[in-house]
Length: 222
Image 1 (cartoon, rainbow, N blue to C red):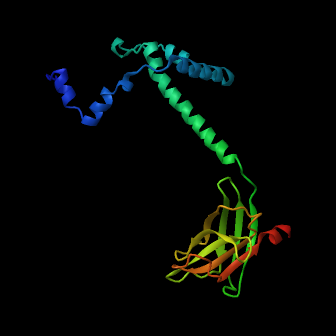
Image 2 (cartoon, one colour):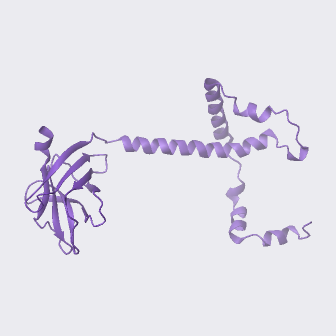
């Protein structure tokens, strides 16, 4: 079956978004040959170390006869392979960069145990505390603490003293979850008291109804 439409008629039949993409000047720009050659050279060097066949030898060395209409010249193949390899190299660099950033400012994990107070004598919790760079991260594993009633929730605090504290996040346990991830923008060396209070939903300050607590300095020295 032949297509009797003129080239302009076939272009008009394209999806408008696809036609706009194909007409963009940057779509048909030649890749930077210097970048392409540097990537191919790096892969060739890696192949020499690992014993793998170099990229261009794989492209050039084929004994299988193919119809001439399907033969792609080496130059054209490299023009297509170059951008693909450049994209792959950029992805690897991005991953390595993210891993490096995650490793900066990291610290060892300190584990502490929170004891229940008279308001929740059966409750206890363990907290894994670290400072990965974005602040203080607290993974709280709670046991024996009843879910917060409707209209109330639990709030974790890092406190400097009874008057000064910073919220580390809220939770309610109504779904039965016992492990909570919390964050605070202060350091435990300056705010060494970790507490959990029962709050009313309308409250913005600490209620003073402490259900779990631990003094981090005392815990870490034991």
